[in-house]
Each structure stands twice: as structure tokens, then as C-alpha cells.
Image (cartoon, rainbow over all chains, first blue to last red):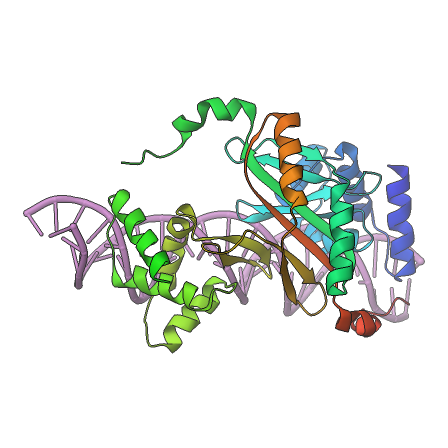
Length: 152
Length: 152
DNA sequence: TTTACTGCAAAAGGTTTGCATGGGT
DNA sequence: ACCCATGCAAACCTTTTGCAGTAAA
């Protein structure tokens, strides 16, 4: 976590911006768990630790934290964006259960190959990708029929 | 396009719902171009053809049209969802230029293999996936530096 | 005749922004 | 001292919803 904060500090300095306690708390909170999060959740987590950082500040800082590659957008769901820490983690994608929301992270080397093909074929310089795979987890496969509206 | 409308009609009938002129116009408009769209754009396209369908009706019908697999969510950008027609099209993913927004559709067989691996390894029954790849298209590679804010 | 569907306008929920205050550098 | 960052509240935008009227079946 020290590394993430240092990275952010140097990014802030490089951009001629200012370091603030709020900014440090946000980074600290994100990397204290290292898990996916959304703005509301992050706000409540900070709050529950007695750190009063406004949502406006979180919203204003997220673009900066993305810009220095410490987090990135993971997926959009339930009307809002979900983010994930990215620094120090192997790049990965998500396998998600469309019934219970369970998330499995995975990585597949073949994605690199796909990127290379695309780069050649369409003359793109490729920076990133995001793969989401959807299905029913083992639990929900059994209960699947219950959750679906009846087809009359 | 006849096929899409028939599919939708039979879906509506099967669900015990009602067919309406508005519903037919929406389907017709979506498949008249077969391209990506968002709600506002679809609304304006209908309007410019003299078809007055309210946005509320579009929003209310999109879940139905997704449910019968005629369209699906493509990506979330600029604060709103983008959809794409799916019926009659080979499943595909998107390569997008992060500078100019250019979209290239592609398909790679390796994604099927990835799905199979995931299915075995994590015991998921997999229904779908969405892969977005980001980079600079050939044009924007040259002009990349211009578009970025200066780093002081 | 029944009741689902539509349009309108209001509401809801996430995100952005204007403004005055406070705090890094 | 300068001016960027914060908190608050209002504004903004997309999407959802309540309601009364309309029209499929």
C-alpha cells in the first residue's frame, strides 16, 4: 500500500496538483481491501472509519486515480460504475453469475494473442481490454428455475 | 427484418402481452440500420420519420427486446447505455478507439475456448461474454499527442 | 369488457458543478 | 499570498414510475 500512495503522490506532484489528507485517505481505503468497489461503498467505508470525505471529492478524484493507473472501471451495473484496484495486481477479467452476482477473477493468456491479432489486422495500438463472462454459478444452476419469471 | 418482427410478435404472444404499433415501430427502427444505438438516438430517429414514440415506451420495451435476444447491451459510455442488434448477426466484440470513438467489430474463435475453460474450472454454465478492447486507431496514433492534456 | 400499453410529467438515483471556505505549497 | 481542493447543495442527465386515458384481445 505504501507503494500505491507513493505512486499517487508523485503523480500529483508531477501534475502540479496538491496532496491532501482526503486524497490519501481515499487511496488508503481503496488499497486497504484491494477489492472491487463503487463510490457509495467507498464513501461508507471511509465514513465507518471516521474519515469524513465527501462524495464530491471521491467523484473528483477518481479520474486522477484512474489516470495514474491505480484503479480502473470494472463494470457498470445497477445504475452505477464499479471500479477495481489495478496496481500490483495481475491484469484479470471477470466471470460473473447473473443470478447471485458472484464474481470470479481470471486471466487467460489467449487474450494477449487476441490483442496481437487485432493490432495487426486493424492497425490499432492497443492499450487495454475488458472481458466479462456471464453465466450461472454452480449454486444458481440448481436453483435457476426458481428465480426466473414463469413463461406461460 | 421481417424475421425480427415475427420473432418479437411470437415472443409477445408467448408472454401473453399485447402487440402495439409503438412496439413494431421500435423494432423496425432498430433493425432498419442494424447498427449500435442508444435510447436518445433511437428516439430521434423515430421522430425524424414522423413516428411519435415516447422515451418512456422505449425504456419500457428495451428489456423485452433484450429478453427475446434481439438486442443486447453493448457498452456504457458518456453516462448512458449503448445497445446493439444481435439477431441474425454473428456474435462479436468491439475494438474501440479511445480518442475518436471509432468502433471495429470482430470475432475470435479463441473466446469460445476461453469460455469452455472457465466453465470447467469454475463450474459455471456460461451464457454470454462481452469483450471490449481499447486503443488508438491508425489515424489517432499519429495525432495522439495533440489530444492529450500537456504534462507540465 | 378487461387490463396491458402509452404519453406525460414527476420522481429517483448517480454524477457533475457553482460557490464560499479552507489549506497546501 | 496564491489558487487548488474541499464540502455543501443545487443542477444535470439518464432511467424509472404514477396516473389517467386509450386500445388490444
